[in-house]
Image 1 (tube, one colour):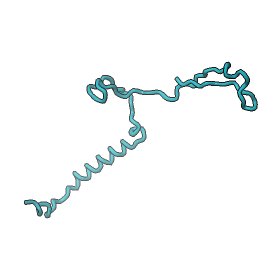
Image 2 (tube, one colour):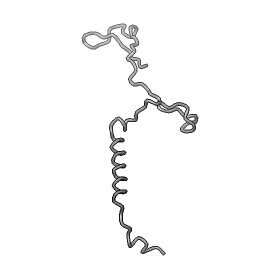
Image 3 (cartoon, one colour):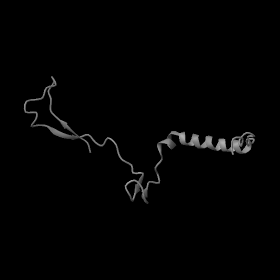
Image 4 (cartoon, one colour):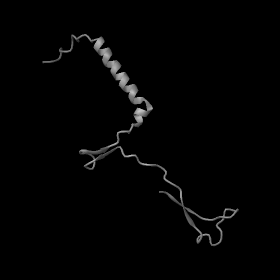
Length: 95
C-alpha cells in the first residue's frame, strides 16, 4: 500500500495557515503486484515447494522464444538432411 501526505493549499499554491494540522493521508494504491513464480525450500535452490502453472515468461510472450526454437529445429533438420563431408586435414596435426 502506498500512502501520500496531502496538505490543503489555496489558489496561490501556498499552504493554508494551520495547514500542517489539517494534513491527511491519502491511499494512492498499489503501484505493482507481485506474482510468485516458484518457491524453493532453500534460499536459492532446493526442492520446489510451489510452482505457478499459469506463469508465462516474458520471452514466450514476446515470441522470441518460439522463434529461437523454430530456428534451432530448422538448423537440426538442415544438418541431418545435408551431412558435412569429413575434413581430410582434421588429423594432420595430431600425434
